[in-house]
Image (cartoon, rainbow, N blue to C red; front, side, top):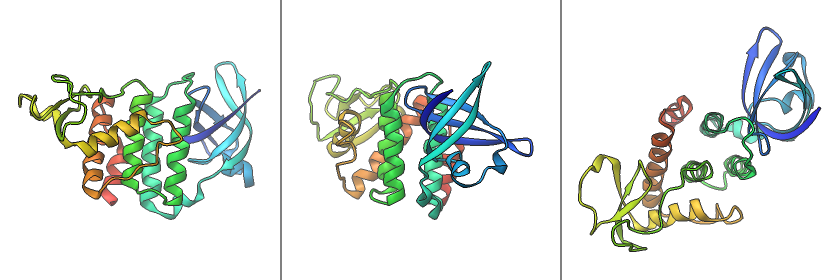
Length: 247
């Protein structure tokens, strides 16, 4: 038997009583676990295995498959269910994690990112657009798609007032060096947006959420972060489409 801490990213019914759950863990990536008699489970054990629950799971391995033996809740994030937009955004985070994180992938920072985003989302201590951008850009950096935001690729200037950020490869040219070609792949942004991107991808987790931007900067940052994630994932997400339809 193995004990892991993790967040339930998805639950799927199987037959009349059973279900599968996908659990994001820090040590073992995303695990698919069978929950027998799920619809008969009440109380703490039942809530521990529901969508977005952060719990401690005792898991048995039989052959190639994993089965839930017992579960104990750590934090259920009930507050997310008070708002359709909150639970929809959290579901988008979960869908992206399921797609990006493979079994046996070890990255406790990814687990911490998910937990922190859900915590701030539940408490309403950061705006949804802020959390969405932080989640998208930091996750991309953690899984190997960190943008190259050190300096202009042509002249090396560190803090250009205006620049063109390349969505497909993550680099940028300052306004003076940009030749104007392939503009569909570039997004024109200003220095405050670049500074926010640098903070998100480079700051340690203790400081990750400790910054503020203006409404205009946030709008541009949100557009950049979403485009960057979708471009590099090479797909759309139904949960994102739904979230955008209700905000």
